[in-house]
Amino acid sequence: MKLHFALVGNQNCGKSTLFNYLTGSNQHVGNFPGVTVQKKEGTILAVPDAGVIDLPGIYSLSPYTSEEIVTRDLLLYNKPDAIINVIDATNIERSLYLSLQLIELNIPMVIALNMMDELTGSGGSIDIKAMEDSLTVPVVPITANSGEGVGELLRRAVEVAQNQQLPQRLDFCSGPVHTAIHSIAHLIETKARRQNLPLRFTATKLIEGDSDFAKALQLSENECDIIGHFVTEMEQNLKTDKEAALADMRYAYIEDLCAQTVQKPKHTEAQLRSVKIDHYLTHKFYAIPIFVLIMGLVFWLTFDVIGAFLSDILSNVIDALTASVDNKLTVLDIAPPMHSLIIDGIFSGVGAVLSFLPTIVTLFFFLSMLEDSGYMARVAFVMDKMLRKIGLSGSSFVPMIIGFGCSVPAIMASRTLASERDRKMTIMLTPFMSCSAKLPIYGMFIAAFFPHNGGLVMLSLYLTGICVAVISGFLLNSLVFRGKPVPFVMELPAYRLPTARNIIMHMWEKAKDFLHKAFTVIFLVSII
Image: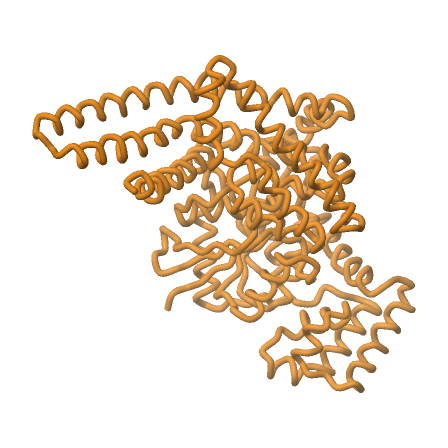
């Protein structure tokens, strides 16, 4: 039988990087939250009869966002053979909160402690054996970027999947929470087993008031009243609400576990370095001018220096090839209509578009550098205040930034936004961002009318698109989508050096898409 693994973890913990390493895929990897907006599947190269699914980054299995629902439903109803829970070792307390919920699902599981090189490089350490004994699931330290430890992780994952090795410890509670969970579990045990739902996890969901589980269990009105009584009694005893009680229960266990197993420096070198850089890049006054200067430099290098130089070389090669074919067709005395079709239609049409390929690849090289370094997350943070003036939050800036690459994944990325209002507004404004499909058109006009100021004109076109989006946002916020955007909370990842592998894969993906269009749609249209 083919084994199926699910990669689950917080946003920006390295799941997609690990997925790419395991499968050889070129899935987009970025150093800001919200890159993966749907599940991605692939075959593990080292184990050809095993598949792996990269699920959206989440912080809990509570159904607050669409990606949490996608992840929870897949784990519950399309049970994988094993879960690979990817954890950021430099932020282990927060990451373990999701791990405890995953253990409650009672599915074979292995924990991958990613970014161990950063933790150990800053003088930190983790007692792997003690953590394994406490959580009762295998724990493997890895560095997904370099592949260190991934072989051992894969071996342990295959082992627990084949042996169906379930977590032995599902109970992390005490006091009134313990009483409520076990009382509800006893009440629903028969129905939960009939529906093939994990008992303890289902009990905690009923405490949270998750109506999906109440419907799945077909609870009677009397049973719902009894559960409500247990919950009320727990809240009164603890003098807090039900969700806070469950969170306190898990974090109390996590604090005790980390105190025994984790030797953590106060701040890692990456975090200290990030604080110093952020003093300027997220400054109240300097941040936006610095962003404009950086993007201006990117466009200047792309359209006036590197991209222009490479485009000229490719154009000369295409011109030489076209001239050679033209001479051969003349020598062969090909009929003028066919001669014109080949030279003026195919070679001139496709060739003119292909000459922009170096420019597009160069632009995506710089955008990948900015994204992988963690700078784009800072831009979203800085832009939050400005976006709120048009009725959006900083979280909408991430899809809009992706929109500079391609509108399709940008609109798909809007699914990570919490409110329907924000999603609809972002979807309507994102196409105003100048995506790669617009570059050949921009390039054509710049070459024809502004040959000596390409970078400046290109920056102006991009800024004009942003200005139109802002004006449209004001109108939509005033006339159509009245209301306030949801509060904006975003993790600012530590600055990291982009890896050559990720950047090359990202550039290749965009180049491949462009070539595919050039030799299909544009090829056919040129002939017609």
